[in-house]
Amino acid sequence: MVLREPRPAGFPLLFTADCRLIEPAVDYLHEHFIQRAHTADTLRTYAEILYDWFETLEQNAIAWRDADAVDLVAYRNRMLSEPSGHTGRPYRISTINHRVRGVLRFYEWLVRNRYLDASPLASQPRDFARVRRPRPARTATSAATDDSLFVLRQFEPLPRPFTSAQACELMAALAPPYDLMARWQLYTGLRVSELLRLDVSDVARRASSTASHDVIEVLRKGRKRGHVVASASLLDETAGYVSQHRRAWVRRARRRGSTSDPGALFVNARGTAAGKNAYQRQVSRAGARCGFRATTHQLRATFACMLLARLERLAAEGAAINPLLIVKVLMGHERIGTTDRYLRAIEVDECTIKDVLDTLLAGTA
Image 1: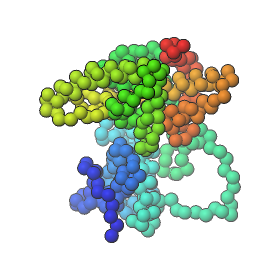
Image 2: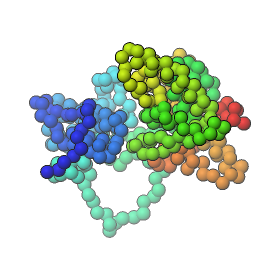
Image 3: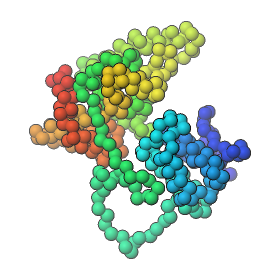
């Protein structure tokens, strides 16, 4: 008998219409969350993909074991022709491709783990040893494409950083703690998930109060260890927030019956850990009040473009550095091709980046 680690509280379970547990799907989610140590957000995304797929199959009286290419194409085309039942808006091409790839990944896992002997949705092993030829290097354009007939053609948009005026307006329009959270993203390039995992103790380890910056260890995407560089001014502002807003909110929560400090660096006015959705809504609404579209990813993109433009300038002046590699490490990218998108964004929008640099770096000159 094979023993496995127990599922944590709140772990998603998938059932058929007659209330039978879909054991392979639960095993699939268990492996990715427990054994592969994926984040809770990744688990939720995988579970939502499988739930939508199984629901579509049941509505059409198709057993999930018997699903084939025709069923997956119909599933894809339905998302193309009908709006989302959750948001009421048309599906984005990236969302459709993400769900299709999620289904294909699941069936490949089923075959690999012997839940199915074979499936039309699982790639078949092929041996091209006799006809194998050197493959040309993938370009940035072809990297976003997929050879599968199920996946729609998609052109990856370039990152669009904020201008200096937009960044200043947005910071001013955000209320605590969301203004400080946005500054952390703008000055360090952290992902939202990485930002929300910061603990009070993470920013209280400054080696010297006279240092111009400090290296902060963070838990990256996929629970990999990484680090970011935080300026002394950002850490001082954070210390002020911890001693004032955060302390007051946590004390008020205790008076109302809360028994423990959430530990998270960023908490809301109720004294509980700030949430991803609430933060993203605040940034979006603040941008709308300022008259432009704003997302949390644009804050991260602004940091990357600002830093890359500065490093490219230093490299052109003779500095022995690799700008792309430095930005890749600080952004926590797994592939250099992802970082290269920011370089192309600089080439497209050089005036915007110059404007951002002139403002954000003025205080450090």
